[in-house]
Image (cartoon, rainbow, N blue to C red; front, side, top):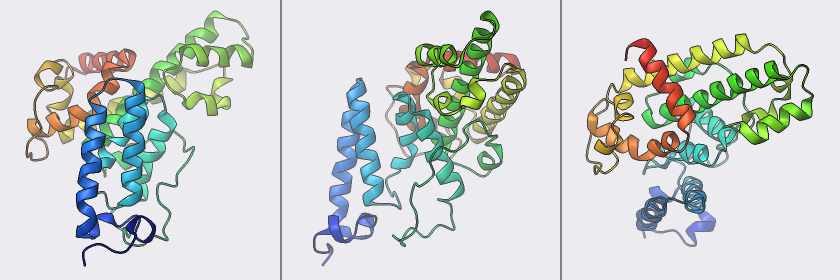
Length: 269
């Protein structure tokens, strides 16, 4: 009575609404969590695959898988997909979205402008994990644009292929691969200022939601081994859970971590 016939074919997207399929979803989440305890790229790939499949089976995401996905994309260098994912939840997958209507498009944003100012959406979001991931993404873009700016300054009139070679060898993010109009510009100063402003505003938005998160990056030993518990928004307990989802995006990308730490020192945080 609690499980429809052949649920994988008949009710994908609605698994949590049927009590009989919930144990499967719970075990699937356990598998994802256990896999992500392994520190290899293959494990991150597998964890991302499991997470996306869980969202396919249960669009309403009663287990909070959407909080983890952007950071997994970032750990794999798939920043464009991380941006598209976060923007979908910020603009389409809001309170007005009908999670029961399987005819509606789902996670259908692709190649969105990752350089655009996201703050209008960020101010309406309360998902700390996704906002942290967006800050990380923008910090990577800032580091990349600064690096490209310096590279172009050192080499008069570099060709498009020389610039792309720099991206292949040095860039933290995959976003520049699809943005040739940015890659070929000669003046990056305005873009550097704009990205710096975006990182600053996202930093403050995260701080507004939870003042404990940024200090936690300087004391990972106090959060990495702590077990998540029930929490209230804005609490240290919330950071313990969010830290588990996001810390590796920082520790595995030191330039982005240093960029945020420099901002923290600059603003007196």
